Image (tube, rainbow, N blue to C red; front, top):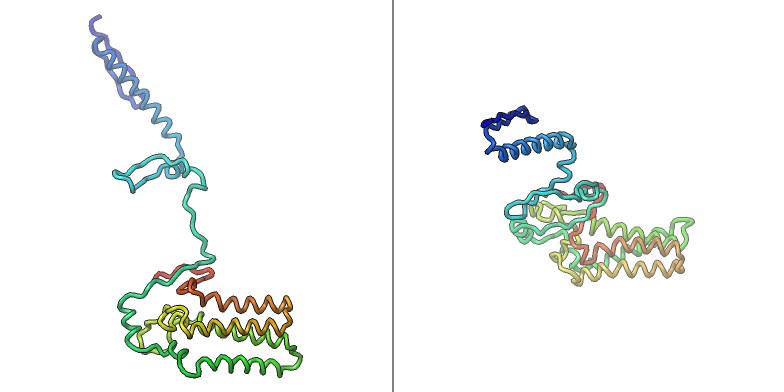
Length: 252
């Protein structure tokens, strides 16, 4: 028989017809191709739709962009993890030119007073006044009086120099709203005479409190933690550093 007619149904209902023995090899290849397509179609139908986005990665950094299988993405360890929002530590960015112009337009009355006459003396006056106040309270021992004096001064110093930001005056259009008083003093310069004095006063008061509490471990721990909370924000590495609990980094 010169011409032999072969018909076979593929997976998709297609018919391959062989009309000549000379075309048999190519026809057989065509039939094998249909069988392979049917097999691939069956295997693809069994794939989970959640498997593809986990295992296929897209690298846009290559030229041309490359797409391939990433075995590390199949497990939870290879996926991108979200950072915790319990504790956020960030630094304030530098001010733009417009804000720097507003800062230099007028003197900063909120921070320049630390270099005025009598500004350093007021610290000693406050410490003595606090000590006398706690001494006249009945039932307060000398150890407790010195510890309370130290804690009160440290707490007030932290609130005044490191917690409150901005300027309580409306003369500069909010040019210092993102800076606390310590960062405003001497235009942010480190180890100026005023900052050295403000750094040495808490240390001296801590040493006095430790001495007059007779180096008791409980009093020493309390006084040490109090001075530590005031000294660390004054160090250069803490300049413009912000630490927030349960709060994200501000957008502006």
